[in-house]
Image (cartoon, rainbow over all chains, first blue to last red; front, side, top):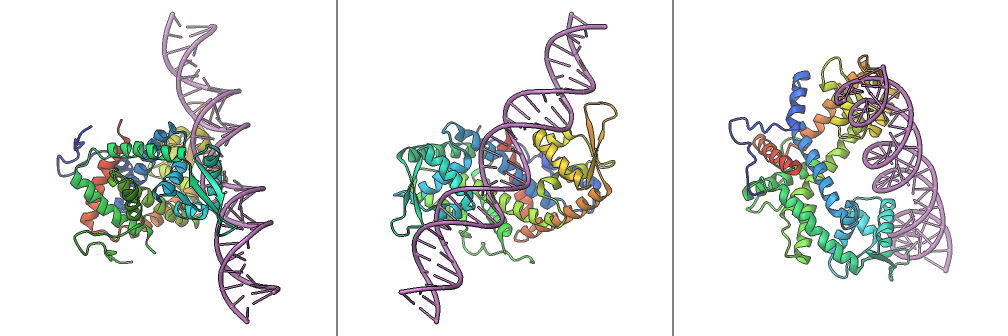
Length: 178
Length: 178
DNA sequence: GGAAAGTAGCTTGCGAGTAAGCTAGTTGCT
DNA sequence: AGCAACTAGCTTACTCGCAAGCTACTTTCC
C-alpha cells in the first residue's frame, strides 16, 4: 500500500519477472536475430493501458457510466462553465467519429446526464451541456478514477513518477510524430 | 528518422507541450484540488498504446491480417516447433473469450494461415497449427512491427529506453497487482 | 444573388468482441 | 460401474465503434 519498491532492484538484472519478460524470452529463443527491446517497452505499455482501463471501467460502474461516457462528461467538465461544447468539438477531442459520438450522446442524454440544445448561431449545430446530475457524477467519478491511478503508482517514488512522466512524454512524441 | 531528440530537453522544465499537458492544465483550472499527476501518466500511456496500435495495425495491412490475428500467429510462432497450441491456450494467453477466439481462428483458417486438427489425446479438444504460409507471414510481420516500434523509440537514448523499461515494469506491476 | 463547396449531426451496415448458454467429451467420487 | 462436476469449443444475442452516405444548413466566390 505504501511505497514498497515492489522489488526489482536487487541484482544487476532486475529480473522482475513479469509476463512480458516471458514473452520476450520466448522470442529470443526462436528468433535470436530480433531486437526484442522495443517489443518489451510497448508490450508493457499495452498491458498497463488495458489493465488500468479495465479497473477504471469497473470503478465507473457504480456511477452507471462506461469509460467512454465518462470521457464525454469529463471533457465537458474540464471545459469549465457553462459546461457546453458542440458534438463536433467532443468527437474531435475524443478522437471519435461523429457516428460514435451520436451514440454516446444518446445514451448520456437518456440517462439525464447532459442535454442537447440548438446552437443559436448555427442552425446546423448543437450545443451539449452537462446537467446538474451529470456534473455531480463526473465530479465524483473523476476522484474515483484518480484514486485507482494513484494506487497503481504506489510502487514508484515521486522521483520515479516524474522520470516516468518525462520518458513517456518523449515516447508519446515519438509515437505520434509525422 | 535518425536520432533527433525531438526537442524537449532545452530548459529546466522540458515543457514539451503535448495534448496531455493541455488536458491536465484544464483540470487544474477547474478542479485545483485534484492531483493531476497520475492522470498525466496514464493519459500518455493510453495515447501511446492507441497511437502505436493504429500504426502497427496499418503495417500489418499489407500482410492481410489485423492486429488481433497477428497476435494469434505470433503466439503460435514463439511457442516454437511444431507451432501448435490449443484454442484454449491461445485464448488464455491473449486474454480473449473462447467465443472471440473461435472467430479469429475461423478467419485465419479461411486465409490458410493455420489449420485446426483434432487433439489425439482429448476428443473435446483441437490443436491449432501454423501453416507454412502462416509462418512466413508472421515472420515478416513481426519484423515490420518491430521496425515501427523502433522508430518510435528514436527520440530516446539507449539509457533512457532502459530506464523506461524499468519504470514500466514497476508500473505494470502496480497496475495488475491484487 | 446564386451555385459550388464545405460543415454539422444523424442513419445504416458492418466487424469484432463479450457474456451466456449449449453439446460433447473427460475426470473424479463413491 | 455410474453419476456429478468439470472442461473444450461453438453458437447466439447484444454492444460498441467505424466507415460511408444522407440531409440540412452555412460559407465562399464569382
